[in-house]
Amino acid sequence: MTKTFAGARLRRLREDRTISQVDLARQLGISASYLNQIEHDARPLTVPVLIRITELFGVDTTFFAPHDTPRLVHDLREALPPRVTVPDLTELATKLPEVAEAVIELFRRYRQAHEQLAEVVGDRELVAGWSPHDRVSDFFYRRQNYIPDLDEAAEALAERIGVRRGETRAALAERLAERHGIRITRDDAASLAGELHRYRPETRTLHLSTSLRPGQEASRIAAQIGLLECADIIDEIIEEEQVDDVQTQILMRVGLANYFAAALIFPYQRFLTAAETMRYDIELLTNHFAMGWESVCHRLSTLQRPKARGVPFSFVRVDRAGNMSKRQSATGFPFSRSGGTCPLWNVYEAFSAPGRVMTQIAAMPDGQRYLWIARTVSRHRGGFRQAGKTFAIGLGCEARHAGRLVYSDGMDLDAAGAATPIGPGCKTCERLSCAQRAAAPIGRSLDLDENRSTFIPYPLKTDGI
Image (cartoon, rainbow, N blue to C red; front, side, top):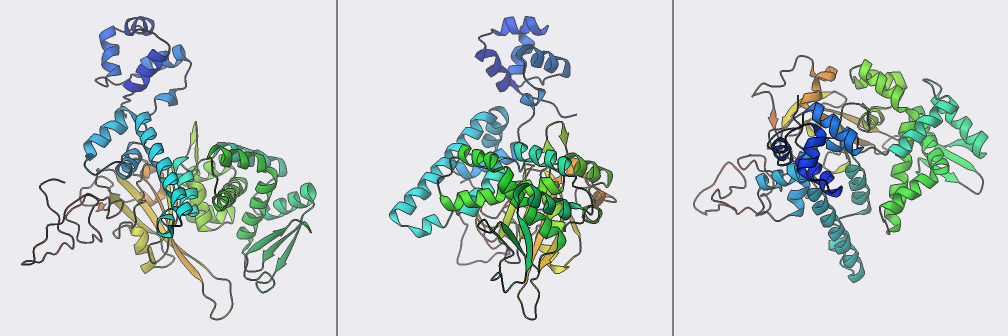
């Protein structure tokens, strides 16, 4: 069982209520010295003491839940200078997680201010570093890909209108027609000028391309329902984020509508029950709900409702060139924000075997292990010589959850040689001897000599930063 160390949070609770250590110890039925050890993380919180604390202060037990340390450490590395060591960052993230989150938030606001200044002075090179798509992706990453208000609203609506297997599209179309007076037409790509869908408010018509499959049509219809019926919730979320840029607002509204659509098509409790019963077999889930591989994987990465959590997954979509067009995470997996991802990651290997499910036990530099599942998906509008799109979809979870997945059967998750050593990205990876390295780590000096060559493309000095 994982030990819970939460000294800083307990101390803050006590000080906020101006209670001395002696008084709190007496109310908890423990000695003052024992309480002092708990507050300094020399002793973990036991279950009986934790229960008494939550009753005394009126807080939920999740208040003392361990913070996502790997995620915080990774984000701190990008926010602070290279001279701050990883052990120091880990200590900050572990003992003072609220301070770590405040530092990351300050860095995010600094970056936003920097980009706004770059736009004012017309420096396009600076602006290009952090696009509206990046801001929206960062928003979902910080929320751990779970938006409770939208998720609960979608589940309640699914129950009211009777969203059922095999009848989803019909139920959604009926809702659009009866509640909003919107009719649906299917048009070929030529009439839509290459668009997959377009809603025309003036005629109250939702145009869908004939190239869309039934599951894709259901997703477009559900997203339109979200834009119409959850506009207040979506606007409130955008206002909370203090998003001023119009393009970012539009993309965030689309992203939230798509989130609602997934929650409407895959109602939370029903989908979680099916996933657990089928041991997260994605193929079975796609057949059960008649939806695509990517849609199912994305929904699996959102199952983080308190007291009804699924496996905490990270979800990623990349193309052959390594461009990451989607990254969402309910785990501490450290996605790189400073350019490039690890070429040893099986998400890229998936392109060598299209349509085949690839599995990998991946070990990060900090020792954390993950089980990753990857497979390619392709999209094509139809027509001879029409260019299509191919992506690799990756879904990963910490190895401690892997036993709940059918994909772990037959694997020795703890074997020393079973894991592939990967990193968050070459610029932030500490694996100095990696032969696949494509860039030197930030803040490290190269060990260069014109009289020698090395197998490692970026030999680094080992005598400190």
